[in-house]
Image 1 (cartoon, rainbow, N blue to C red):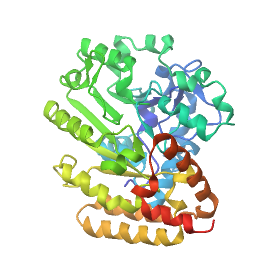
Image 2: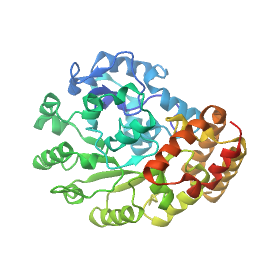
Image 3: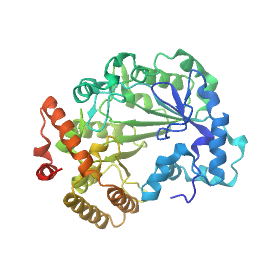
Image 4: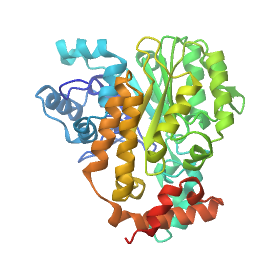
Length: 409
């Protein structure tokens, strides 16, 4: 991991949220004054006074307030978004640290969250990131003010109808941007995403890096086939969101069909043999006790091992919101079991430095707080409501978690 707080993103990147807010990156904490496409064109964001101040702080060795999430992750020993960016392109980072001059500031990387359209209802998600969550959200939080008229919430409508934004993306701008990242919602359900891809194809921008964070449940959408469209591009990356395998994974990420996901993965590898693949794994109360089993299922797929380092391309993030699904909600007895199993994973993955370091970070996160008394009742309440609505039963799939119901909280 890098030893300072410099991140390449403030020099070249912008993140556009579904509501039109423009930020440093997808994990940046809210700023005192939010920028929006209404008042800050994305093409001018990187060169703004706001971003210049962030760059200045980093060069002085100070963590910007917006970067608190990365700072917290790195202090725990976990890979942060910053270190993930650096590890994927160490050469650019080294060049930046040698010569961080302002003349290198230019928007060349864009992360778009076009809408919250999604076909999954993951347990850890919300209506803000999945429109499929709407009815469940209303059932769990009937008195929440945001359920009064969800259709008027601009975070729900997304930036699809923001013509001024799409008009910015003329041929010159499209050519300047060398890296595109699409997420959602589910990016592969967005018409605007496919139309943008068609524009890149029309100008033969095949050297552009195309990156997705996706549940990868869809290959064919309307008349578009994503695998066929991506064949001309030289640098394609899929960050596959997968918080569990098999039936347990299907419970955690409602909408996942494990067999279909494996089939789609085989088709991806056949169509795009040079595409880079990794898995993003959110560690929660629902998978922490079975983590070794889930990792083994990923290993058995035999598609996620780096050919150079032989390490498994799996990144881990400890869920902290909603807090009732955090691993910190485990009872003292189950925390002890979880730590023993995390140590066992480290011993089993003796040659996988990234996984060993991640297990240390997860243990540090586990010990950081005790939310059992505070949040276990909320875990039971929300889980029971969703189980009844979805005709599921967490006690059958996760009997060890059900033991906590015997604990007086």
